[in-house]
Image 1 (cartoon, rainbow, N blue to C red):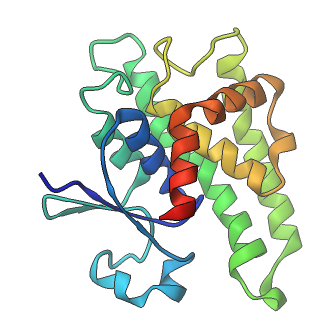
Image 2: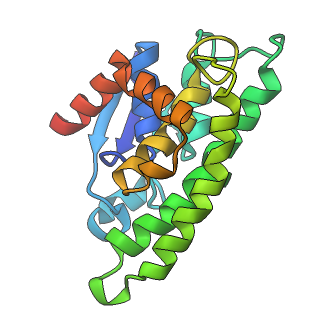
Length: 206
């Protein structure tokens, strides 16, 4: 059977998918792209007209949303929270929150610190969206305040991957200090996992 193909930029949100695949022991054909693909990878448009990562191609179908790809990877594994589990809707809410609420302000920070040319970078936008992220990240701290190890279902799931990536990305942008104490400890547990370590090692040599 031909493995799925994952188009990925190092430490971009496609890392969620590579991390999930490593956790689920799913083999993927990893295609490493330069970031941002729209500037450096013109041939990628034939695969994904959006020119975004991730691009997940399986059985002729393209998927482009990292949380949805994580759901596909997790299906039938302990990484998934099943509909008959008490935390199912909390789990689904975390998956949507990972991008709509948490990764969005970080994407603005990336744009105005790394993507735009020097003369178009906006320090005020970076600070504003750093604060925006900090306010939204309080939801992670609140969820972990009771001492729980993982976000839902009493085990590590793709909710931890999806949200954990956002927290990890914040640390790479100098915004790790807006994370609460419990959140930082939880992120440390996420990043200590073999799946996360393998994913980052693999992206370095692909």
